[in-house]
Each structure stands twice: as structure tokens, then as C-alpha cells.
Length: 304
Image 1 (tube, rainbow, N blue to C red):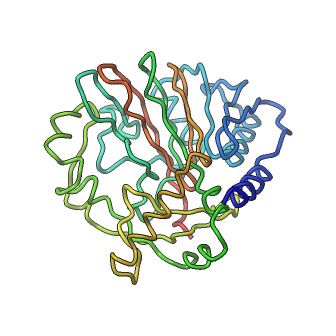
Image 2 (cartoon, helix red, strand yellow):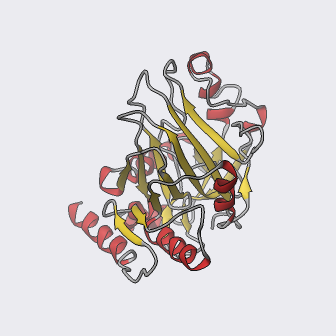
């Protein structure tokens, strides 16, 4: 198994070995994914610098910018450089900027939004390209976000497992999270987490199918595309057949070797590629406030 992982990392690193950046600095966070980007003012991003930022995004899947000072208008404008913006149908945005979603945990609250390994909104026909999360207020410690490379996860699978899952389609739904019987409609959550405003809807129970293994539309690389939060089954399989496969893939995709960790500071902005990553918001700062703004970019085509 160790040899398989080493081969996976050799494949991953060969895809991020570029050093020919002229306008930005790129410092990898971990072997599988993630990099801190320096030399950038996101409020004043010229076209040539943007092109290098976009290349670093594709190279590293998660890119982190420190000491940024942007307004909600500038945050949204930055997102639009990458594509049209999405408005989350189950989570409220700012009153004057509905495309900017506040992600807040108050000191009195027990729950954290995103406190499970997941890929955002895979229940949609066209899931997001990615999200840009900006830190406005963070605790003195805790509140980090973990990210996992589903490229590395696919690369590390055996040839036998790849043959099994290539061509399968997974069923995705928001019902178990945002539906009337979902975890975010439970009394404990509703009374313990009110700063991030959740809209529970019957429409969340709709289903959508996507390939278990998708090909990234810009890099051409394959990755695993299932997650604990929104993947509920596999087309043509009974639950007792599908569940062990999905459980194995979800656990495999978030192995520590495939992850990086972002430690937030006020003014940090992190942009992750939703097409080839999962993420997990840590809930390890009881009695402290954390306030973020998120902008989500729409992809152009369905997963293939």
C-alpha cells in the first residue's frame, strides 16, 4: 500500500512541478495539494497576474492568499473573474449581496457549518467550479479547514478498483442535509446554530447523478467524485451493494496523506477547486467567534 501511495504522489507532484511564475510566489502547503500565493493584491489584480493565479489554482487545487483587504463587492468581482457566481438555494446570503454567503459561528453556538468531509453542492446538475472563502474574524486558535485531493485519491487506487468504479454513476441529493428530515433541520442544530441561516426545503430531496470518477474539464486528470454529505447511492445497485463501495471511497479519499490544512488569519482568502477536492471545517474553538464570507463560482458543464 505504501508503494501505491508513493506512486500516487509521484503522479501528483509531476503535475505541480512548475516553477515558471514571474509575478507571484508559490509555496506548497503539502505534497498532495495546496499552496500559499504571495505577491498579490486581490483588490487590484491585473490580467497577467490573474493568469498566473489561475495556473497556480489548477496546479495546486487549493490556493491561499494572506493579508488581503477586500469588500463584499471586490470579493464578488474577484469570483466573477473565474466565472458566473452561484446563489446557494439552502443558505442565505448577505441582504445587499446575495451572492456573498456569510459563514458564521457565534461563541454560544455548538455546531459548525461544513463540519463533515464533503464536496460542495454535488446535488446540483452542474456543481460549483470552486469557492473563495475570506476570513473576517477568526479565533486565536482553532477553526482551521482541511482539504483533500481527490486526484491523489484516484491515483492511489489499485487497477482493479479503478476498473470497478470507472463508468459507475453515483446518486447525489441534498435531502440528508437540507431536507425536512435532514441533519440541519434537527432541533439540536436549529437551536445551536443560528448565525449561518439555513433554509430547509422539500426540494432538497431531489436527486442528481454524476460519474463516480470524473475527468477534470481543465486539467484532464481523473478524480474520485463522491462524498459523505451528498452521495446517497450508485445507479443500478441496491444499498447493500453500493454502501460498502461508497464508504470505502469516501474514507480512502480523505486519508491524511492526501490532505493539507489551512490555518486562518484575518484577511486570509482561500480558493479551492471543488471539482477535485473535498474539505472539512474543524469545530475546535468552543466559546469563540469565527466569521467568514464565501463566494461560489459556477462551473460551465456537468461532470463527465
